Picture 1: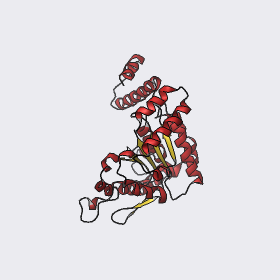
Picture 2: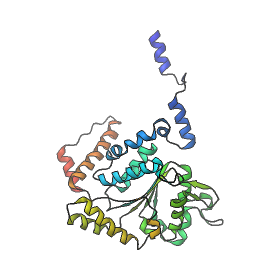
Picture 3: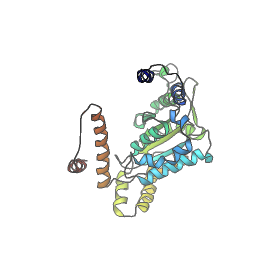
Length: 299
């Protein structure tokens, strides 16, 4: 009888006690503040940052270290608390992990991979398109929708903002983004303020891919190759992005080309995700070493 009552109590829909976790979960839904932000000390989270990012991002040790150090510097009070947590420019060829690192940061720091807003800056190549970031003026189509950037941050104040292919944006775009980097907020077309002080802003660029490849093929010294490639690519980037904007970015991070070993490890991680997904459907999946190597060669 006692055992039945215990089972009944455990399966009851109504809890007799409200725990800290319950309160945190409700407040998180109301405010958009991640649950672990309230339950886990930020210090503890920041100390484990590299380890967590390495679980998802392969072959980019220098990039992970640079981002982790910059985030810790910001949260240690060495930066204006009214500005974004961190602003980064990710440089590198396509498919080396720039977007994946942004997703990993969102998942670990803000509890949710979806706590990331991706904006394709190639959609802002024309002057008339720039206003869409903060919302169309009164009388224009899209006025009621709000700004693509401001609305996203108002809805997710704790998030990663990914500005993809920044070099393709119209020069007027940087007037808006400069305000975010300088003041940490942006006012939309209806006078509402979007606060960026709890966001991480990441800009990516694939510009100079051939230069990066050449630099890394020319030397085995990774550090030298990174510095040389960074100097060359930034010089190229300054032709389309205002220098005063680049100077306000906390850190410019160069992603290295992937090795064969890196690709094999990435394939293994992807297959691990497939295995987990199929297991939820009671389907067993296993890949041999030969199969992993075969897939890696096809990449």
